[in-house]
Length: 282
Image 1 (cartoon, rainbow, N blue to C red):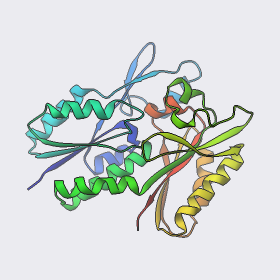
Image 2 (cartoon, rainbow, N blue to C red):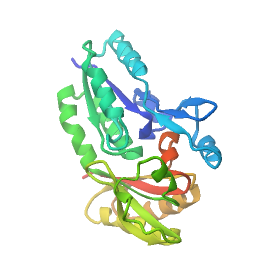
Image 3 (cartoon, rainbow, N blue to C red):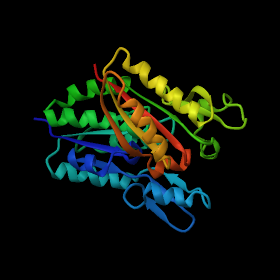
Image 4 (tube, rainbow, N blue to C red):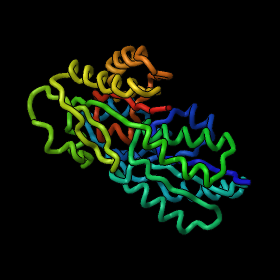
């Protein structure tokens, strides 16, 4: 019988409660300031990061392969026969490739490393749905075949105050060249199926950006039952407004507020982000 461990990186933005509930092991990114480095999510909060950003934009580095090896060693000792590892998009980070290479040299357990081609709770949804299959007792092969459908059914849309942080972090992807540098123009950004940022639409100011996000959300619910996760990066009031409007749409089976963009992603998006992750469930 399969005994399957589940591992993910801290860019998934899952709460500690969900990680504990489903026994999901975490690989934290490193957040590196000039005077100190922190394990993402474990030693640094989003609030601390946004307070520090005006004076210093820290660097980030990949999760520790030593930590991964320790988690796999522990899994073997605990009788696990398989491990599934889900990462953020390989277009944003070398995490997927470094973990895949490390697992090729770890023979004591059967591993499957999956590139979610997304991040934040869009990655987190894939992790959660995988965790539920493990809990239901599905086999390793069944789960591995099913995981891509979770990615196919999940999308992310958000707006940000400034492109400054995406530019400095080199994460701007296909947003570059599509946004005119004019006063108060807000992009509505998504992640395409290749795992890259892409401009979905443009808005004149925050109010219009909110309106466009609501229109996108409504388009998903016209023909599908959907779950929504409302996220923010130091923009809780905007997220609350989005939440209040989305939760009352037809065909919304669940809508949750309070998903903060973690430090590993917040470094690259900066303050003022709000948006949603949507999962089609039928």
